[in-house]
Length: 516
Image 1: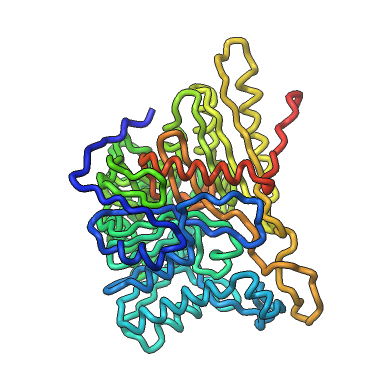
Image 2: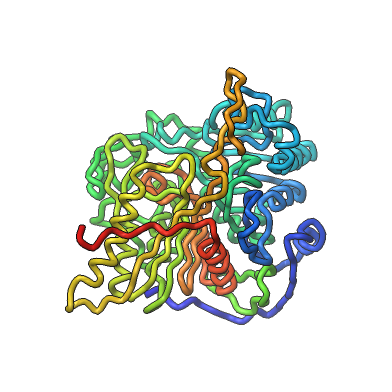
């Protein structure tokens, strides 16, 4: 069971009720107050009229504009790639061939507004630092390079994770404004992430303690960009995953005598243990925050945490990202419900040279089904780029239901339920014109119409992350999660999940036949 959240009364209560519709009015004015505040953030694709909206949840596009527009000193951004500006005239773009009216209907202008807010911040001489992957076709990192061109207050750093871990990317999506306002979530720096992809994140205003912690992680990745990876990597025999793989030379997957001196702050070292085992008492953030987007004002505070991936860039007693997810599953009460949402799910690696079998999350799910009679509900995206062997792993997870009832000795009443999320039009995506100029019949741009959020929520704890639920995202890829025992965030996140679960856009994954 998870430890009971520490609570104490606030000496000052500033109840604020702010809806997404007044973000630029009341929210901007209120952001100068002393109290830390948190809102859940969503992007909901167009043309989903039957999805119930959860009140008090902010829009991703509005939040990113606000972070840029209200920055007075600094803005730090972690990004996988940049495509805020739509390119319907570029034959290499997934937007190619769509008309101006199409792009307006898709909401592409939201991306232009965010990019314009960034340009305005740059012109105000705000110090902007960007840590990014090299990006993707057609323009790779052109937007961030254009932002920096001729502006000495803009610095871009590219980290190639494959040089450090053999595979992986900067997959974290984080914005930090003035070292006090923070966005953490699933949304990429892409116009499609604002209006054509379903995203989930959390936004903090006036929360320097949270921002300071995320800044350490940002700085760790920035430091990697300044180092020669050839001098700072070794080949390790990873006993935990039974593979030989490249790791930073300070990795705990190496024996102590083989390690180098770490150029970044060290994470806690546990003697006589290989790798990065779960911490019995990981660092928790003892900060209170109000939740203006929820109907009930927060008068008590609850412990929160941050977790990071890969383990080699964690620090102090902050937990690795995998533990954040596992502990959230384990926090469920007896007979309770765990709700989980992801784009991708695999019980293995996807990009590693040697294939890794990975059962960390599926084992945690089966354990609470057996020992706590818990119900675990999992939503997985079904879209144009669905990973083919996903269903086999989902079916194996559903087999827990058969095992649970397999013996008269079992006192097992839990179950696993899984649904695919099918955003309307998911199978009609891609450029409207082929590079040869012929009509394709696609109704939406490429890489859209997908549920992309990554989160888990039990009865008592919420975990909001940036990683798909596949081994690589926890061991070779940059990712961040924020978690909390705050009951307002927990309840509202449950409501967001339930709106999806009971919508007409989800389809039950059929269980294995009991005779199999």
